[in-house]
Length: 239
Image 1 (tube, rainbow, N blue to C red):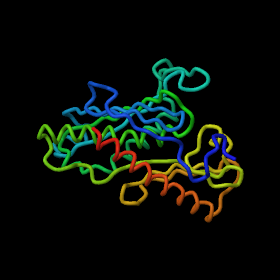
Image 2 (cartoon, helix red, strand yellow):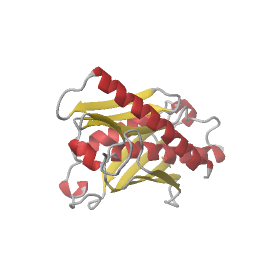
Image 3 (spheres, rainbow, N blue to C red):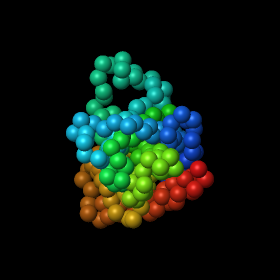
């Protein structure tokens, strides 16, 4: 029995609210069970040095957890004088995942910054950030198109992400914190709307996993992402 009573192939209750930040070119609040992440997309008419003069754009991401997004308070990165290694790894994952969807020539020589701030953390914050971050990105792109700043859609496909794992010898989809902390294996899966994978992050926490267990986790993740794509599409259609 899972802590919240779900079947092994069930997502947590998931919803996406459009436009919680009035000044951002695109924003979304994604709620996955008790996990809540606020995602904002900001357009700037500049690119990194290595992109200057290329007529190609850029997409990057930043990720942060509020001090009381967890059960005990954590310090802000600014107070530490450095960016936490886990935070760097997660924001790089978010950036790579979203860049995989973008035609940079169609975007033009401008950047879109995706900020993902975790308000409540109950497992799956990086996957929720990617799923919500895509919606914020799509809204920002729609605003660029409406203003005539881009002529063709720079987004080639949807991007979403979900976790899967082996807990108590069973493959399970979309782990919450209690399951994640007790998992034998934890895998974060990022996929495109046409059914392909963009990135897989899997590790054995307790003991090695078999090929059949890996296949079962990937099958769960694929079915979960199909449902997430539908949730994204529903949210964007209401924008």
